[in-house]
Structure formats: structure tokens, C-alpha cells
Amino acid sequence: MIIPVRCYTCGKVMGDKWDIYQQKINEGKNHKEIFRELKVNRYCCKIILKSHVNLIDKILEYEDNE
Image (tube, rainbow, N blue to C red):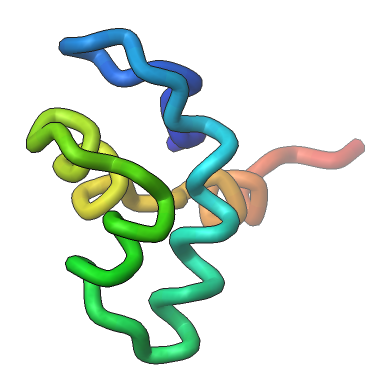
């Protein structure tokens, strides 16, 4: 739903990298280049960024606003 603040495995801060990662993906950059720029070296951290699905906007569509 919301990007994890820290990596589940190693504890590195990941929450601040999500917006930059998404911006660079939309620009068409390669994952390898992005990880090098963001200094994300561990597989556990790469998995969090690559596999995260941002569903919060879709869930909010179904919220009952009375």
C-alpha cells in the first residue's frame, strides 16, 4: 500500500527513495543505473523498490465520503 519506511531485512531507510525511483523509471532509465544513483546495493532493498505496488489511490476511490 504505502512504501515501507525501512527495508524489512537490513533496516536501511527506503521511504525517501520511492519518489525519485518512480520519477527515473518514468523517464525510462535502467534499473541498474537508478540503483547505482540511489546507492541501493543490497538485494533486499532492490526487491522492495521493484516489487512495491502503490495501491493507496485505488483504495481511496472506494472510500465512503459522507
